[in-house]
Image (cartoon, rainbow, N blue to C red; front, side, top):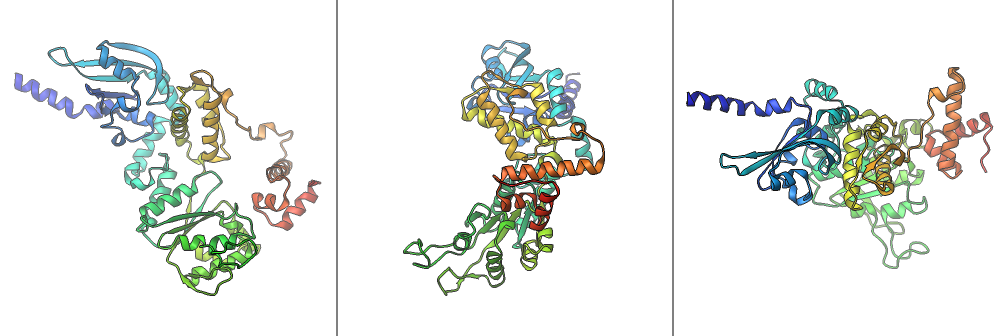
Length: 458
């Protein structure tokens, strides 16, 4: 009889992980030392990090006031306690169960979230049904992505496919062009590709082509010799391309390069050497180029604003980084990641309310991840209590069809187009050239639309 019971309990233990993973509630177990020995899929989903990264960590190191540790000290059962959970980063209702051996000594503590608020929150962040459908239809998970890409946070299928492609091309020497809207994290992708490449021990040099004045971009890229122009260093200067020798050169906002710089860059991609401004020495360079842009280069090529031969040399492997609105599963994960980061940075103990999370999840995020990060930091800073509400978010509301004063489609398009041009002019401080770049249209089309909508630029 005793042997049968032993086999019976052994069988239960073998299926315990499967049983606990069927619960939507987050479940965590720590041993008597405070080390995390188990988390279920519900907790993994709420935390936004795979269990392999959590197991073996000691709760005392980061969260010395955690309720799990309090139960470990007191040995008292706690039921349905509403509190701020430091590891999850928001308010939760949970129970804490001390696990004792036959002598009455505590050997572990289990924390079990209450389904009511947690399940609702989970539905807002990343619907469980969507997650389970994703797992059944797409076998790609974070486990398939190399650790070099861990700085890029998220679980959405579109993001994982993008990460997988980036990892596949990292080991190659082909030129990569990262395409995507402002704020999606293109430089993070470039750095991760470099870190996973065979050049990882050599320099990664990043250049924002839009941030450098046009009259300085060539000297920044190619360097210059002593006394080559007024204001030049007496010793000369090494250019960014030389600095990236044996490593990776990342050219961000590649669409903002002037025609003359495009010619010099094309020559470098063909001949693999640079000549510093004012010099005639040919310096051989071994470098891999990764570029990035949020502009429509194909349209720029057609309009003669970007050289077609340079475009084809740089666009060998295009990787499209998805905007945040196309990966809604990641909004909650990223929001809590930034919340925990800024809460620690500013020494605060805050969490999101349900309405706040609903607000974040419903927003359209035109500025993508960069905007989300700024919004969360702003909310953490101005929040005076322990709960962040939707009123703490500095979100610009977008114009939608319900706010239009008419339903005629042609008029709606013109209304939106005019508002977009006005917004671009405002953002560019009424600098026409910058506004044209923001809009991604030709100069001729820009002036035609100014005339059409009777817009005057001061």
